[in-house]
Image (cartoon, rainbow, N blue to C red):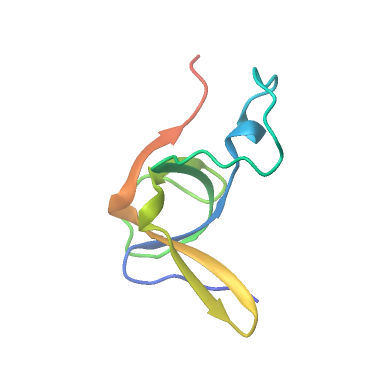
Length: 93
C-alpha cells in the first residue's frame, strides 16, 4: 500500500543513528534506549504543496515528538509536517 501525503506532509521512514555511522564508538545493551528529542529519517514521499526543498530518498533531521503514526489496514505510516524538519543531512564536499 502507498500513502500519498497532502497538506505539506512528508511520509518518512526512521533511521537508527547507528545505521548512519560506519564504526560505532560504544557498545550498549540491545534493549538500551537513549531519550533523544531528535530523529533522522528518509523521505518516502511528499505532498505536492510542500515548499521544503527536500525530496524522496533524502535524509532529514526532525523533532521526533512531531512524528505522527497512521495505521491503515494493518500498515503503518510515519507522517511529518514539513515545518518540523530541522535540516537535510548530506556529505560536505
